[in-house]
Length: 425
Image (cartoon, rainbow, N blue to C red; front, side, top):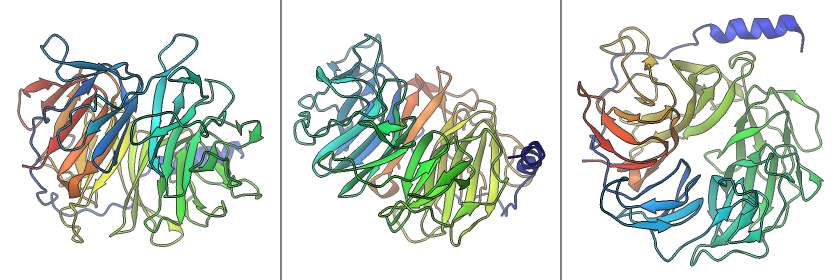
């Protein structure tokens, strides 16, 4: 790529995209400003996943606790990954797994997926329950027992971790910093069957993958990360700025792409979310600090709107309220932005309302200030947002120690360490 093209792309990326604006977003459901009394952790939560009656959390923690530090309560040892009751938010004391490192440093679980009666997880670790496992493992859903067949060496070292994971009923897809699996070349993407066998599926990107997402039909896999090129299985690298889409069965690179220069150089697609009803892909960007909405109705990935924040957008989720109507659908996004989000004139009563590490818009990017939890106490804020119970509950995992009601000034706060859940009133 020439220097002139790089400069042109940076300039174009700084220009405002087409913005679909109208009035302030219509009211959505009224979530409680105070988080539910669910259990918490003693370290950062990077992944929150629902499967059946349970919510699995992964991160860099060693214990799960019922109350904040300094308050009377219970704690349970569970290192790197834990299971909670989806209804009560209480930890499952019978389901215990210990994800560790031989160098004595804290291991990290970055991604979780559930398929075939197993809980697959990936991250930066080399031991699970004392048994060697390099960055990838699985345990049984029923009892958390380590699966002996899922033992692929992903990356070859702790420096090449898995950062993203999704699963169909038959296949587990992973993305990250690795370039090989068991010595076989896999450039930042790989797939396994539910027995743990490496599959021939091997598209590639020209840089690390931080997020994975199925399309609405489950036939394609979106990958987001720090790359400017991607290739289908056996193909040559072509331009794909931070997001690429592959055939879930063949690994072929699909034609859909963001318009050249919509996303600036050096940007990282931290997370992806879809509105299937409106065929929009929402991309949380770091480096350039944007939330993008792209059209996926055809192969021309036009940027429909952009919202700029004062820090990385690390997680994004869509709440479709469990209905086919889209007027009250919401996009939730979080990260380490503390100074607010910039909205077009007329869409908010304030030009840059304070939305500390969490924001809410409708599908057109209009802000919704009616529910404004602020995540305080630590720098990075939310790392994962999960919507469950047909839109009635929202789980947030990350790096924070307090949740505050941003609709009030001064904002009242409650202590919530690294995990919070909100319920529709």
